[in-house]
Image (cartoon, rainbow over all chains, first blue to last red; front, top):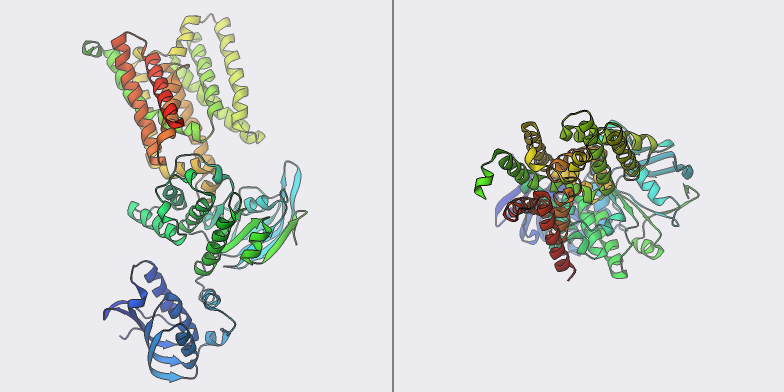
Length: 339
Length: 265
């Protein structure tokens, strides 16, 4: 049987897939992440490709491809990014609704995220909060708070110190009980037995770890994300390395966590969340203890993560300058509710 | 020196000391990382209460201290859960209650003060067979517990909230650690006494925390230091004709001082 998608390295097939639509390309992306091929040296051969497939091919870093049935709309994408292409048959458009939905205004990253969402391959999970009221020591901190965040979306919650930002995150994580209201993470209600089983789907980056003095290496901190997973030592090491490389912190792996700079600690902590395979990232004042350079690097890393891994991200911060740099949707938390 | 080891009570003491020396510092790391130092004082005072009670009832003091500490820990856990209070703070209350009750028992039941005070410096060479095997069993259990749950414990030691959100049942481990600590303190009191048990529990963990370069290294070093102190303390005590527990404590303290000075410089 002829494969839908085949990739060659030095004329030898290294990957093939028979699925339909864009799924073979997403599978190929996963394959390439786990192997150390130089994508520029590979030849991709696909049966059909439109604009959507072209965007994915370009984003993976291919420089040469052969397409059986090629849509004319794919050609500008290949030409813009210098991909050498050939085809058996050229058509004005292919019968695929996805191609019509990609507008010229969308850049490569936006298109990629859009396609991942459409393929249901977004790491993120939706979050829904309904009428949440939380009281601490008799004082009402959150009052009938409502919030909805789609899969792979990002939100920043701003607010002054003591406005309840951390309380909001801890409630979502199930660390603080709610007086009333419900929180859904995906289809699970926080506090239930099924949520408890999948608790690691929500990852938490808090401020307290900045002060940890315990002798623990950066790699050991990242491996905390794998706690409870029954995997071999070799697999554990591989997962840690992969996560640390994604946040450009692998060179710190043997260093003691408490000896790292603020920015390095945040990179390592983000790697921990990736290792955990968290689908909802909750970041509590991540720029505390960071200088301007580290803040900028963290923002760039978060933007990169939001595009590549596409987890749902909720950040609480009162750092207005940094929030502007991220340029994500922002809500203000005041008097116990979001506005 | 070797002649002395051929005596059964001394050999028994040496065997227990070696195994416990390597195992007990594991709980020292737990105490340090989980900020349970006040709890340790409660357990020490609880052990004196248990010892006084046992002597009054002419029962085995080691099991008396063990039982009292278990009861204290269970009461502490339920009270702190019910009152939503910090167990560390509550342990101060139980510490005072324990020692006051201990002295009431000593006074009312005419418990020989010297024997009760014997709990302060331990009695390594008077171990019964049951005490011998209990101490070894506890040491082995500590090793197994640490080996089986090393990843979960590492997460908790790093940050309790992060451990919880990584899927670790943090509160269950917290109570398991408290329970194990209670048992270890009771056993260590019999070996080296209430006043010197830190030489086997805390000092090895503290020293390891100064120079270890990872969590794994800290656990291994704490265990290794404990073993070194126990073995060297035992042989030097025989060589210099000193009490074993004091010699162990002295060697641990001198090592601690040297490492601390080196660390600070």
